[in-house]
Amino acid sequence: MSRRTPVFLPKLTKAFQALGRQPRYTIKTICYGLVGAGAAIAMALCMEFLFEHTIHHFAELPLWKFALYSFLSIGITSAIVGFLLTVYAPDAAGSGIPQLKLAYWERFGYVSWKETWVKFVAATLSVGGGTSLGREGPSVFLAGAMAGHFARW
Image 1 (cartoon, rainbow, N blue to C red):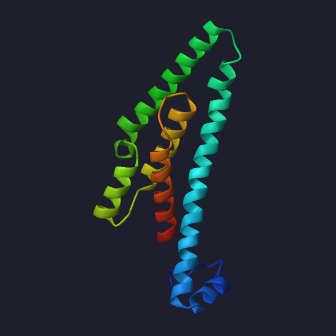
Image 2: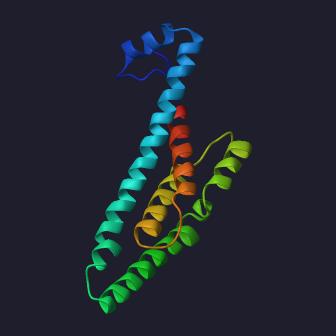
């Protein structure tokens, strides 16, 4: 068995290789899309979970508690994100779309696992913790990075 053939899927691999070129590309493209979409959905669900257990929960409290707890939530999550993006993985900073384009043009689409997971955690903490950021850029980055990892596998 060649190095590229997964040991646990020999029959599926053989059947896949027996397909024509166009069906193989179509199936690969669908798989990349599913992996990317799954990663973006997982991040959105994590954001929603964190938001429900922080800001949304605080909204039921008296105004002064809502303001205090929301401020603390935003401050703590922003400090963690700042640490992750400044000290641990500076390459994961930014919205995500320009970084993904840069990876495509300079590194043939390669995005490290470290960048991928830090972007996932940082975006989840930022948006879920109450910071007024969008999730579109990180979703595109994460979907592209995960599809790239899957393609290399």
